[in-house]
Length: 143
Image (cartoon, rainbow, N blue to C red; front, side, top):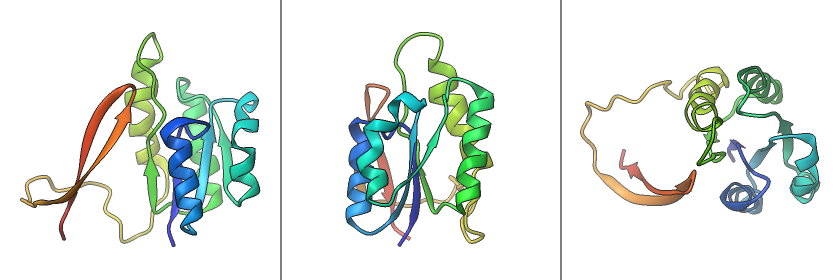
């Protein structure tokens, strides 16, 4: 089974993803913006999820989140679910934090750090997700 870190997992799609992954037997690390939101993930923690706390709008908190996640072990996947749609936090939460977490979180040795987009591949299926209020499609390519 995989070990998966999910940002913004106190409610919405992040929480639903955490619940589904736990149901399927995966190891899950959930994230809340602050300690006041911990109660929202208590049932997930009771089911075995680990939790990290930090505000993705603050670059030092984001670095701390990566450190906390790395102390838990290598992640097989990161779901960047946290997002905001207005105000000053848009850039740090929606763009900087996912980039920084992707760069700083340890991953298994056999997982590449970058995708070669020059390689042509077809999509086996699409996954629809809502990120910061926008519907996006993610291509899941055939091997």
